[in-house]
Length: 354
Image 1 (cartoon, rainbow, N blue to C red):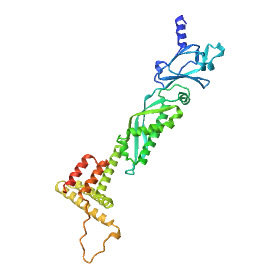
Image 2: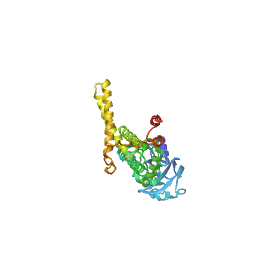
Image 3: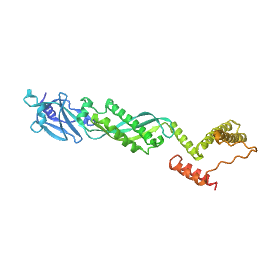
Image 4: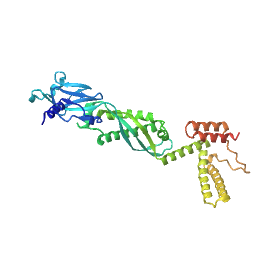
């Protein structure tokens, strides 16, 4: 070994720092446990250095450049190698990143949740990114088992599962406790509220690892496109039922819609032209007739009038006023059950009766 090799080796022994190649690691272990007295320790502004001996935590040094000698760093007395006359320390040195580290991805299915508005159980999925930060470096070392770590799937996967579990719990809380429609959750309008709920819910789970999730990024809650269309259709049906007015309106709406569907099917089955239109009209008329019959058949027996000697014409049911219909329509728009275009079209239709 030449003189220059000897000098370079001595300099490496005297300089202890995290190499540039390990800057992206949350946890980095200095490879040599033999530390010369008066070695220079450099700790970055976003990290701390921990000293361990025989698996026991000895002390911690913060950012800066430090000369390792027991006269100015008292805890070094505990790691002096007496066989070398106090010229060498024997310890493991760990560098722990304490800044926020972003770019960890998560995503997956969080299970079926019940939509409080429709009662349907819908499969919900989430994806996005999250950032981690060490809050207690000594606990971090205990969790990682004293080994270097950057983006090891064993650890990232564990935190990801904790995150997905918490998201599922918090979304269920919003649906059940606040009775929020599922489409409100997936619309993105409540992203900030859900993010705050999730981060708060993660705190007790992460404290034992000396870590915390600081924030979520590109956070999206979604459902399948066909499930979204089903919910939208059910919400619109519910709005039309409310416009029709109560149980009787629901019965007429349901029966009429079914028979109108039958009429459409008959029209599509025709030969086209006038014959198809006649079949569609017949189907619609049949639907309206069946709806009236269904509504009358569901009336309680106590409400049925006694048959008079001479049959009287049935009284026409009272129709809601135009003002009431307009109020109901605006209420449906304000609650998000119909959009602006549907509101304008229905309002124009009602005003035609003036």
